[in-house]
Image 1 (cartoon, one colour):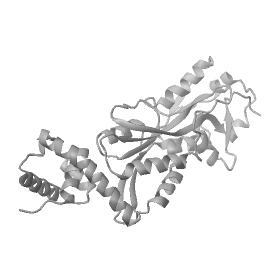
Image 2: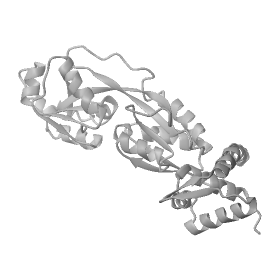
Image 3: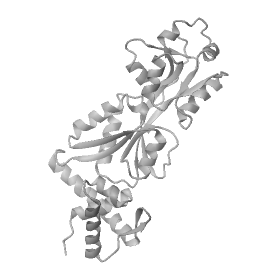
Image 4: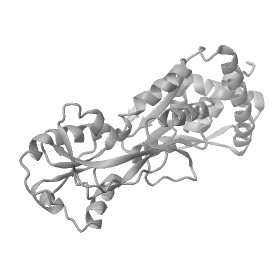
Length: 311
């Protein structure tokens, strides 16, 4: 009978996190048949059943749950020990990261900071809406999510704030040159408003800000991609709501003009999120580095909205 090794323990803990043998095989860069063989060897050596099938997923048996609960802290400590002595340049560690569209202006700088400190880190980045990223975290498809704050189940997810960013209204410089009536409602009567789609809390924040000032948008268009929203505004499609950093970074040619100063929108809070049951040892270190790097890119606390008039 084959002797059990650290690989067997890592395999069992990985299946417990991701829920299927197929997902574990992808995560551990091997085949499903290899994963199945490892579990058979463990169960034969330990004389217990670790997993029970429930349709397409597998669940820990009571004995399997006790084994994983005891094994995971030991696995984490051993991995930390090996990382300490290999100087962070050993075998690549792959982390699956989900990022919201509005994070793309500053997330590359955060990733660079992390990669400089962890040169063995390899990442798969998925860009999507917050709801899809949270689902990916809950299903074990993602290890980390970097997204704008919304409705998050804190009972299942470990959440840490990265900081805040103002949301501002912009219009193309070309459209602005033809404006003579600067009253907010006159602008909203003349130009459509462009927001993120209704499932996003950006949508409600934008409309609520308008309604809170007694204003009404006659036409509301939506776009699910922040970068495309920026291009649409630059192309002269109307007034759009954008994260300040994204707009400023892409406005070197002066193609955008900030408008509706009288209608401040609540700033975005960005979060870094992982599932409580995902015990990949490197995650805590990555989160700590991401928080440190974000201090120079985002505002630690929500800034006071600018209520001044345009120059």
